[in-house]
Length: 302
Ligand SMILES: Nc1ncnc2c1ncn2[C@@H]1O[C@H](COP(=O)(O)OP(=O)(O)OP(=O)(O)O)[C@@H](O)[C@H]1O
Ligand SMILES: [Mg+2]
Image (tube, rainbow, N blue to C red; front, top):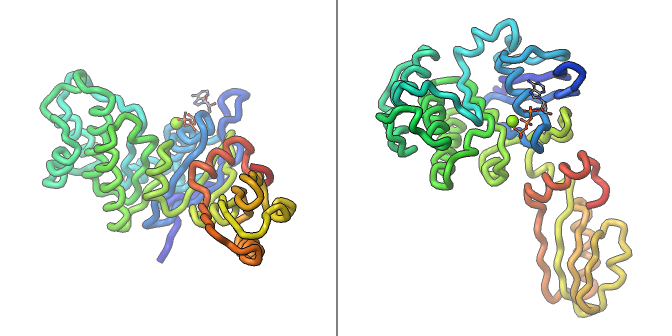
């Protein structure tokens, strides 16, 4: 049965007069990896800090496991693992000691899985934390989180300091959590990471959620790029209202964008013109993101 692990309802957060969160509504279901994306300063970390009970909301509500994030923070934290983008560690403890400390704070123990993660992330856990690079500090927090048996994992740009090999290890571990039926809230600027792992995505901009849904559904709302060569001239295609950014290369070849819901109709028309070659590319997450980023979620223009 699908249940709501995280439920955020019209959440607001003001810092003095500044409204960092204006209206955030989203849910993360059990067994789901939810991607939280949006430009710098959009309010992702503020939303996450409110969920963790670090910040108190100015309006609206948020629950985790059906419990209020502010009043029931202690109970919630027993079943939650969190990794921020900039990890603070005790400088005089070794990485291994900090991992064990994190685990202990969650009422857990160092296990064989912890050792396996230390190997996978190639961390020298015997070194003092003060000697660690940003990526290594990140690994310490990730190892502790992945070796915790939590119900919800919250990652706020967890891989900002990791190299591509370690990014791959991170993704493999998140996919393992997903297979184990855990829930994950992942804020990220690495769109390939989001694309590969997330069941649903929420796009936040200036303190508001401007779109949520599956990546497929978002692609449906958008436009595909078509490149076509036909035997008959293509000029009339440019006049269609569902065709945009028409760029001709001579009379018989053109590249243009088509509203995804009308792709079939456009291709039917092209078939009438005698298709020689046809290539259709759905929008990438980058395309979608740039569009939302620039226009605040309006669906006109591109
Ligand atoms: N403690 C604070 N006091 C005042 N303003 C704050 C505070 N924390 C965050 N803000 C402001 O709230 C807005 C949202 O910040 P937040 O850190 O949530 O963005 P973000 O989406 O996580 O961005 P990034 O992708 O850069 O991490 C920003 O304008 C930020 O300056
Ligand atoms: Mg942030």
